Length: 570
Image 1 (tube, rainbow, N blue to C red):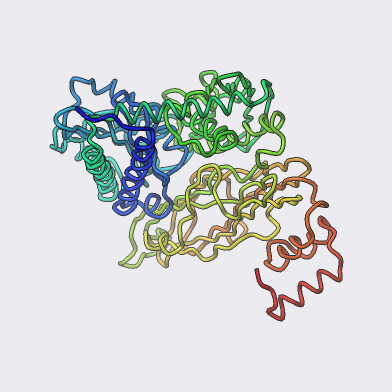
Image 2 (image 1 turned 180 degrees about the horizontal axis):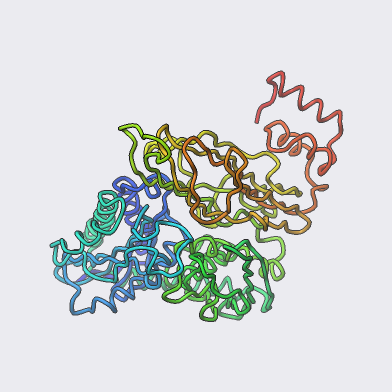
C-alpha cells in the first residue's frame, strides 16, 4: 500500500506533474517535423486521470488545442472501450468534433500503466502541414473535401504499429514523410511523459494518481468557484462583426454570472458559412473558457475542475457550433475572435479588466510551390508545401500597451524567416513592424507587420490566404482608436482576397500588411513621455504624434534630432 501524503507533499507532486507534461511538450518540439510545431509551438500536451479528466497541462501550447483536448480523452475512452485499453497501446484521431476542431490537428492518446494497472493517460496534439484533400484553407464546401479523416482508433496495439493505417495515411497526403514523422513524434512525446510519471510514482511511493488527482481537482474547483462567487451577479451582452469569407459574420454572446458558474450563450450568432471557416463547439468552448479564465482566475492551473464552471451554449449550426459535415479547416479564424466577443460583454460587468480588441485570428498563409508552367522550369525546381504562422498586434490593456506582432488569444509564436525559407523554395522579402497600425489611446494598441513573400527562381505558387480584419478592424475600448486593417495584393497591384487559394505567377510577390490591435482609453490622456518614446522607436509617425496625441512641433523636432544623432535609448 502507498503511504498517506500531506497537502505539502501533494503540492510538490502537483508541481512535479506540471514539469512532467512540460517535458512531454518539449520532446514534441524537439522531434516534430512540421515547422508549425518546432518553431511556432502549435501544440498541446497533458496528463489525465483514468476517467479522462485533465489533471495538468504543459506551459507550452495553445489554448485552442489544450482546452479542446481536455474534452477529447473521454471520447477516446468511450470509442476504444475500457476492455480494449491495453499496455503499449497508442490511439490516434483527427476528428474535428472529438479532437481539436479540424482535420489538420492530430491528437494522440497513450494509456499509462504501472504494475499492470491503468493509472492515467497522456495526450498531445499538433498541427500538421498537410492532411490531403484541397489543402489547408477555406475553399471546401464540406469536411469531406478537407482531407483524410482518421477516426479514433489504435495507432499501436500493445506496441505493434498498424502498418495498414500508415500506408493509408501515406497514400493520401502531399508530405507523407513529414506527417508520419509528426505522428511518431507525438507518440514518442507521450512515451516520455509516461516514463517521467512512473519515476514520480515510484519516488513518492504511490499506487496510482487517485490521491494527487483528487487534491488537484478539489483545490482547483474550490479556488475557481471562490473567484466566481466574488463577482457581481449580472448579465451583459457582447457583439462583434468580422469579415467572414464572402459576407460578414456576427458573433453575439450573453454572459451571465451566477453564484457557481458563468454562462456564455451565443444565441443570435451568424449561421454556418458555405466555406471552411465554421467552428465546432469544442473549439469555440476552448477559447471562451480561456478568455474568462484569463480575466477572472489567470493563476489557477488549467484542468478539468477549473474549466468546469464555465458553461458554453450555442445553437446547432451557428458558426460557433458547426456539426458534421460542415467545412471547418479554418475554424481558428472564428474561434480566435470568441474572446473579444466575450470581453465585449465582460467589460460591462467588470470595467477596467479586459483589453481592447486585437488582431484576433492568426495571420497565417500557406504557399503551395511548384515548377513554373509558363516557361521551361529549371531542373532543380520542386513541389513543396510551406505553412507560416504570423501575428498582428494585440489589443491595448487597461494599464499597458498592446504587444507588437504577438498572437492573442492563440499564443503561438511567429515563425522565423530562416525556418520558413528552409522548409521550401519560398523567399520572405520583407518582414517588419508596421508603424501607425496600433490603435491610438491612453494605452496604444500593438503593431501589426509588413510581409512580402515570393518564390525562388523557376517556381510559381498558389497562395492560401487565411486573414481577417480586412473590412472590420479591431475596435478600441473606453475611447481608444481602431487598429489598422489587413491589406493584401500582388506587387504589381493585382487585388487579392483575404481568404482562399489564389494563383501567383512566376516572378510575382504577395505584399501584405497585417492588422494592429486597438487602443484603450482617450489618446489625449497618454503620457507624452510614451508618445515621444513611440515616435523615437518608429512605432508612430510625426503626424500621428501631433494629430492624435497633441505632441508639439518643438517636441517632435527634438525627438527627430535625437534619433538622427543616435542619442535615443530605451
